[in-house]
Image (cartoon, rainbow, N blue to C red; front, side, top):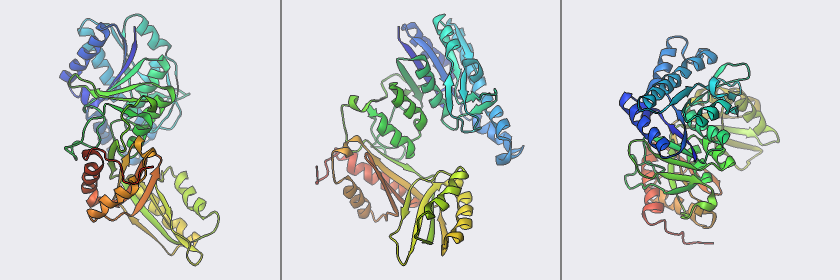
Length: 413
């Protein structure tokens, strides 16, 4: 008898009828002979509604602790309703909050990280033939304080639970059919991938793909938990996320993705001396601002320009810090631009083929799109461009690398 962890997102439990549909799916898995633990997000729109409510009591400045206490109620509502729906179908089910399921996190409210799961009570329920319905997104710290894991945190809960239970499989049910080569809403010709490597999925998640939270994929990779991303609205296979050696079709480019949620800051004319970068980026790190891409120009007359990107939500704070630190570094000016987007191509096949970057730059040049920054890894190339050209860039790159049969670049190793 295999043990499966299933995760259903907010769109899957958006209303009573969808909750009943999820219940039928869960019961079908149980009747097929599997032991089943189900991780559930808050009903669609619930978290946003709670955040709006919190705006009346302090908004962004409200207590982080109380914000987590408020937001955690969304999942508690969802797990109770799903457990009741499963029971109506004649299958025993029991709901568990984070405290009841023994999910321990650190004390970072709003962005907590899972430290440990004591799965004793979950295992006992499963051994008794019960379906365990678990609250995603939430945890408790060492002092028993409620915490939340950040947007998409239910994915991380599901994979962490799968690891704690030594599950055979973690199924992520969502409102899409699987992982696509691009956003189907933007690129109609995008196609669903049958399999993708953990490393590719991590890159896609970090670069803007919203199907899976990046932390969940990292945990799955570390513990070798197979993930199956599939639709909660109809039957059929989705996309398997698995070890690189198990991916049969090694496409040069498996996906083209984008992120419009970044901004760019340039600190000009800083002194080109040791320690300058640390003095600039240290305060940003202390403020909890994540810096993504960094470009430092070649030194000219003992000065240089430093350009970097940050989340657009942190743009104002990052600009204030840069404007404060810049003069201390001898800067001649600080400029910001929140009208940018990052477009990326990702694929395992890039390890074995040269010429991908050249082809990407040629495609963008033919569309008259200027590249402002470039970032690379072994299996990805990212460029920063003006946001108004983002959709054009994604479609053009997808047509060149995916729709044209993933043709091999001319200069192959």
